[in-house]
Length: 462
Image 1 (cartoon, rainbow, N blue to C red):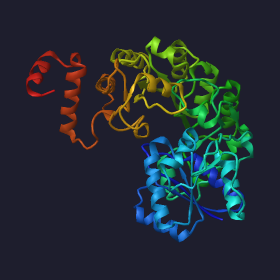
Image 2 (image 1 turned 45 degrees about the vertical axis):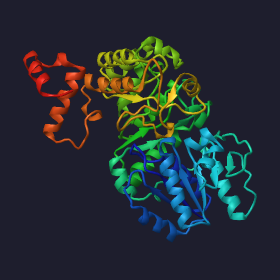
Image 3 (image 1 turned 180 degrees about the vertical axis):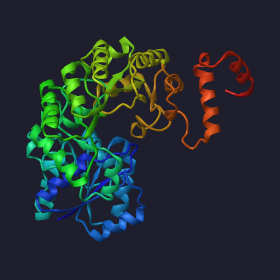
Image 4 (image 1 turned 120 degrees about the vertical axis):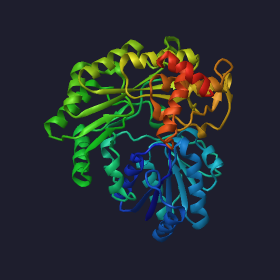
């Protein structure tokens, strides 16, 4: 059967490893697959629609994150309008956390998938091909209110390698992004703001490390990649396994730089692991600090301490690995003053970069329930942005209103001189200079010489 997979435009560049796994699994079963990577490639709607129509698929699968829901819905509507007989399937994080309500909000979708699709989606495709009933665990159908639970793959080594050959403009994309490697799935931790355990399960499952390294070597040979990134949510849960992975990279002469952009837990790091990671090619690790205010931090139930985090950062840096951090603005108990504590922590530990992200609550998390009880929604959470673009809170509370959340964002990035997050890229050189001075006058005036400060106050309207 012919199947089209689509990754909608989003806010972060990067290959969709989920669709690559689906592509590999479908090809393994003998199906013909085309993947339209609309996230990394600017393709006019009529152009990709014409290609889809020419390919003439029976099924179109669309990957849906909460932040790409509206784009995904528009894509589904466009496909349905042009090809009314095509069956459209939505999968990924968003359908998994919202269930049946997904197709209520996006009626062009025929089916939704909850959980990991490598087993579920090929079964659905085969059932449709054979004209059999589509009552499959993890699949819900539009208009059918039967409760469905997410399904997770237990043995990750039985999944076919991810396949990127059918992605649009894959060579050009591979030249500018790191190759994503998934060595494990699931999260055993209980962070109140995080939906990962709902999306990939509480049970931590791993791939055989020889299987992982073989995939990396294949990617180096096929795509001539120069770097890869570990996209696990919990790469270092098993410290001994992480060390063995590094030893295998060294022993098999992989010689590629790599990073951990999703973050690793700092209570699961020691100096031996840090040194091995560096020797194996690791250059950057991100860490989820979330808040350096002790009371705010305790409330999110990460299961580690700020001391653990600081010691882990120092350990990685001592081994020669660059460490960046993620912070969240808007957690329960947060404030502008709490954000200042996070800024001081980022300075003290030398985190580079230090991303300050506006909190977006997700259904099914304890934080979602807290927001409904204590906050006011200002926008649809699906419009929320974590990392890129103007800071626009989707909710506020009496003790931390939206204007103060925005202030905290600009203050944090100004104090850290992270201008790329607060100045529009369209600014010319003079515009950037004026923009920086405005921000410094408002948030960090002591950084300016006294005589300059007095003169600027009269000339620049804040």
